[in-house]
View 1 (cartoon, helix red, strand yellow):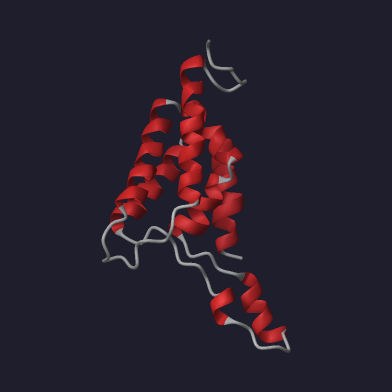
View 2 (view 1 turned 60 degrees about the vertical axis):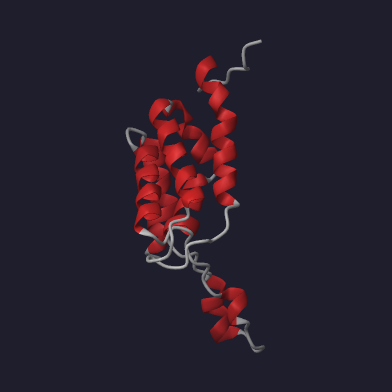
Length: 148
């Protein structure tokens, strides 16, 4: 009756694998609710980010799942920073046909209030703390592309 164990989990922790992945998928599919830094805090998003942070604190073995689920990209390009579309920047100058601004404009971040941005940043820090592979992954997929 014990849960199936993987190479990076213990029987107790593996019971939380599903919850962890479900929360990640839920954040990925969560709509953009916060309009600006002064709008009402998206309590549902804040709760999901905080719960993931607490789970990782209790079960650091979950950290590799975040990388497997490409969650770092979600935190950077949809939660913390606007998702800039490079194709729009290039197509404005090279396309002979009119370009739809709405179709190519940057998608704004989900975390606009101080509370949700702090929660997302704390989660990111928790994911990279004492985890060299995750830190390297964040630099390669999140930070470096911001400057290119």
